[in-house]
Length: 66
Image (cartoon, rainbow, N blue to C red; front, side, top):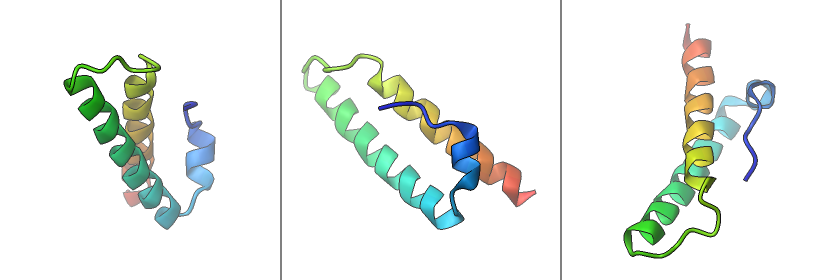
């Protein structure tokens, strides 16, 4: 999972961004569930990358509301 660039996020339509947030949140929930059950994550930085991507998308959404 690579970090999304802000320029890529700005090029997405509003519906695409909302869909992407839903996908990322589902994936984050799955990763957290795996970690909670004691499973070792395949990529330890993956959870942080997911959270960062979600935050970037939400930031662009807030900026465009103004």
